[in-house]
Image 1 (cartoon, one colour):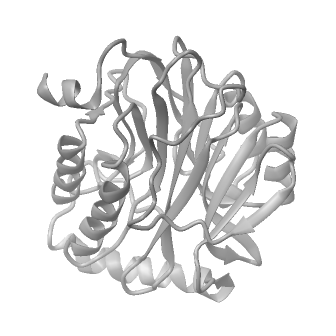
Image 2 (cartoon, rainbow, N blue to C red):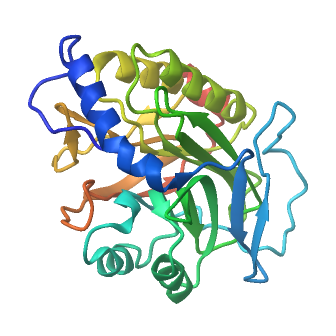
Length: 310
């Protein structure tokens, strides 16, 4: 749920008022939301049949160094195009038109606040995409969370779920792994919807620490993108701390245009082992967030350790 836009950063006097506003706005959500006891990973893979599983990332989860099927299609090392968008539960008009237009020729699409409506399923089918959704809750009976769709089938996926303080509605993370054509490396893609309102940053820190435990097991290229809700200096510091630990770079958008909450852009793309070729921001009225995109190529000869030592 978004916060009011402002030209200034969050300060301590603002927090109580925003929490009251947030709790008031969440009453409507809670009246319509049902929270499953367990993680729910919903997928459409090679047989195009919808499946459900627990799918939780655990301490034993390993998303690297597995035997990869050489016959399985992979991403091009020369061009990996990403679209990232908080789609606001598809509550505004024309989101389908914008999603169809902006997803054209994108290899991987990351959505936050994705509600698994018939309309969204139709768009994904029209684009002939494989996808996984980590459902945090059911909104009006419809699974809602973070979704990653792609033109090639993921090798594997798992999810994390952390409850918002005060209202206990979960925010979710989805982690997927992809083959790269003619490369021994595999691309790990993580989609995050960050904890939003809290007193202090302990819940936000816990969420990003849980993600770090999963990502640090991967020694290849990484894309970490989503709605980070890093609308304060303290939250941004936590995000940057995660980036430093994992040798991630934060993509810059010189042209501006990203949605601001309390003066800060919260839609971010972090990366490792890749070189950005182009990036863009798309002003829309179909969500309270503007979509962002980037096209990468695989950085030749750079391992995670070499990137860290640069």
